Picture (tube, rainbow, N blue to C red):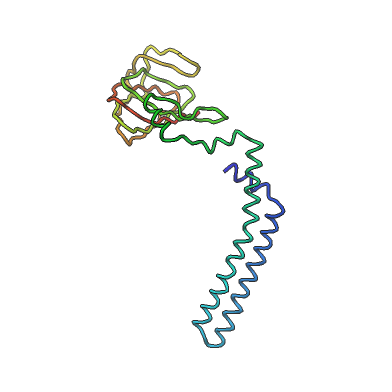
Length: 213
């Protein structure tokens, strides 16, 4: 949306000219259609009047399409110029091949990191055994399960929590909390600051994680 808005804001002379010409053509085509309809209707050929009117309007359509070309060129040029001025926006075209995704799930890896000003990361996650309790103080986790099953506990109180990195806390277990069983096709959102624990895992447990900050 940001790119489109910026492109539209930088309207060129050719775009303005195309807009004016298209408006004129619209009224010319409409007038020609009305005249055609009235003429043949008065002649008593009602069916022919409708057919000829439709023909006139259809013929005008390709000309309107041709006038749209300068508009497309203007917006495309603006988009290119914007990307040249702000290279960080190029990440919108990020793409990971199936081969790399498969390799990522084979060992668990980051598909997209938080570089270039992104406020999210995408992980290809793999679990073979139960894990430690995790708390991400800034990142919200969005999970989507591909394979395997797991029992996840969320909320409650973390036991023996320790900071292992900035904004990351790990603990031994959770007391209280809510237990859920995840299966392929399930999705789950874990807000930042909420303790969560993969208490039991049927390996291999494969799932996408989108971390949003």
